[in-house]
Amino acid sequence: MNGTWLAAVFPHLALDLATRDTAIDDQALAITEDMRGRPVVADCTATAEQLGVRVGMTVAAALAVASELVLCERQPGAEARALQRLAAWAYQFSGQVSLEPSTATLYLEIGGSRRLFGAPGPLREQLAHDLGVLGYRAMAGTAPTPAAARLAARQGLDIDSAEQLERYLARLPLAALGLEPSELRALRGMGFRHARELLRLPRPDLARRLGPALLERLDRLRGHRPDPRPPWRPPEHYRANLDLGTEVHEASGLVFPLQRMIREFCGVLRGGDHGVQSVDIELRLREGRQRLRLGLQAPGRDEARFMTLLRERLEHLQLSSPAVEITLQASRLLPFDAPATDLFGDSADIDSCLDPVLERLRARLGDDAVSGLGGVEEHRPEYSWRTPAPGADSPCPALPHRPAWLCQPPRPCVIADYQVLAGPERIETGWWDGRDCRRDYYVMRDPHGAALWVYREYKPAPGWYLHGIFG
Image (cartoon, rainbow, N blue to C red; front, side):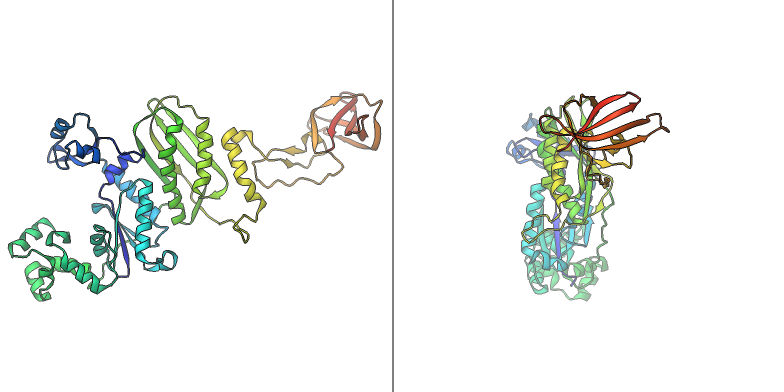
């Protein structure tokens, strides 16, 4: 046996991709593909089925029974890219994931996941549920071999042992074994109807009647022969597209599809133990494009945090024309270090507590409207500070005798009623950059009791000036 495998099969992948942008599946929609030169229905919604549309029906016949039917051409490339993203998303459940694009199936070796997720049954149910939340209808099953897990997925079964697998296979009709049409016809011509009849044959008879290739597939299905699956490795960047089924005229209508995209993206980040510091969202409009960025103070992967920033951005976003497609991408997936927490799960780092506040301010006001405050080694007070990015390390010289609040620009003042508390402090500098000055600074108290920082200017504009206020 090859351990414990979980198979997730996506029988409606093309239809899921066409309907993921909405929470309501009440549209009469059909997926079409070319079959021997004729367009036929490859899949359809339940509403279309109620109108008489059936899989395999020609498009002309489908439109004849349902004139309001919406048609979407199948996109094999989009399905392949979706499977790649789902494989990366599934990494949060297993470190060994394999793809089978021809059957739209994901295989996860979950024997090593028991300590984290428990028995195969609850893990299978959790995975199927989470995929449903993302907008994908998946059938999932577990078994000792990958091929058997795919068979078990049809009924949502958990097969725990080789003996249980043999009993399960014996109950299947011959057609359920996933044989090639030519193999199935040949076996039926020999009088076989059920899998148990086939499996009872001695191996020499099986090899003589069926050939070595089919015998090898049966051995892999039953666990008599290893069935290695090529491991899939996630890329170092992320990109996802979502075609909107209908044009979206208001930014608020983008919240639901973007939430599904972000939820899937955060699962990919958890699977690779990654975080991101920024996510770029591009909206393709009927005319033109619009872009927005969600920025974090430190690499993160929390869905609620992203959604908070997204809602702030969308609240102030005006679409110049209706949106028809969404692209979400992150060019750099960074290592993720979980923040330290105290006994009660709260953050022990004051900076991490401030990060969500800074992120929301930047999302609401714009990146350029929020900055930090840092010091510069400069004698002239008006040039001794700068505005670094929020959270950036910017040491500030300790000058307790100077006020934190400066008047920009300094205001002319009259000191006749002021009381001198300290000073003078001479500052004479700046001849090399054309902004030279010569000043004497005093700490004074005005008639109202406020402590002020006042200087006498000798050049370039002689006089008394108020430059700061002590808190």
